[in-house]
Length: 285
Image 1 (cartoon, rainbow, N blue to C red):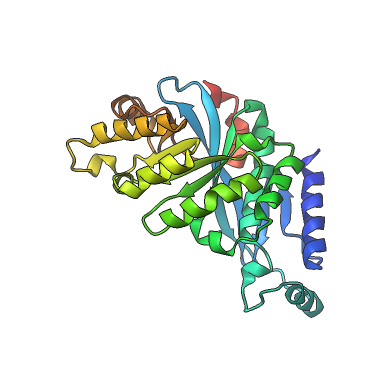
Image 2: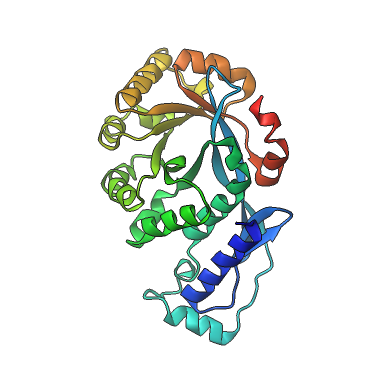
């Protein structure tokens, strides 16, 4: 289905759900974005490659691109309809336009021109949104995936893990994935958190498809056993059936870091959706 038709479909659905003529999704120069109050959200993508075979790309990580946008004023009767259609009013703008749904839909739509690369799309979930997510959220996300013509197993839900959110993720993620019918999962850590016992417990219990670690500050870690610990982490992830990803690295560091840490995959620089479409042919080499 052409991108414009999909944009129209999701705008119509939004209007029906919220009884509004406001159309948040827009298509400009082949790129999808969405309006959320005074901001416009889009997508940037980063290729994820085999660590020791960098020519092989297994997927792309998505991030939000945010810019300012002049607020579109709604008519007073539209605002009233939006509010009366929501069970929780309390001035919560997220109850009117679900930012989580908007951003993921934007990523799905922007990724469509790249599906010929036959890789996975990594989409982050903010743990702070977990408690407020509706029970049908997983089903909604699955519907977005199918409507866009993607395969659920090729969509990876990424959760950033810290000490505060570990228990929430551990108790919430399995049920959501069941509801989401076959989505892959990834846990994202920083080095300090990976050394906590609850992180290992989380990996063992959830058996994520991927575990990622930022390499940004690894050169500042004062730990002579760091690479040994990273190899232990990789072995634990592998024993749970997953793969490890070293994130935020430059090309010069990737080979040595991957070799020393034993990680399976690497993620480097980010580019926006428009540039990635232009260079997608080059990115295979």
